[in-house]
Length: 91
Image 1 (spheres, rainbow, N blue to C red):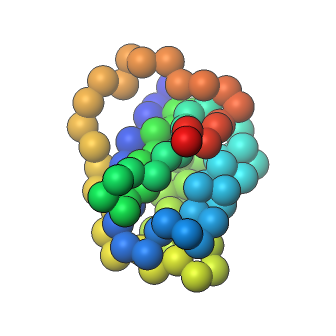
Image 2: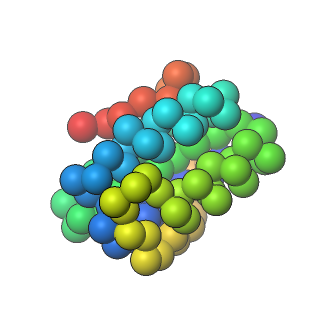
Image 3: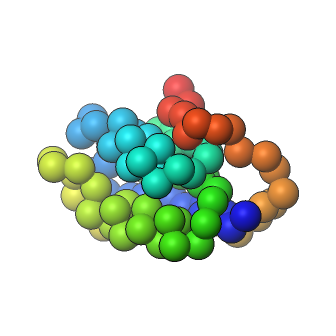
């Protein structure tokens, strides 16, 4: 299983971004989670097939209507931690 762990910056809170990510990830059959950060960014950890993760990454670069993504940054780290299935929103 491949893992995508990223931080999304810009206008990404208060625009349905977490819901958008959850629905897209579930549609792609991915495990993982999405959460808002105190900084105003959104963090996503997703696991699954490389092609599905690439499709999710492309969706994250755009976001839902009303969002304004300015940066998508990879977060290095532990890819061995199990990710929840189905994909969920952490509050």
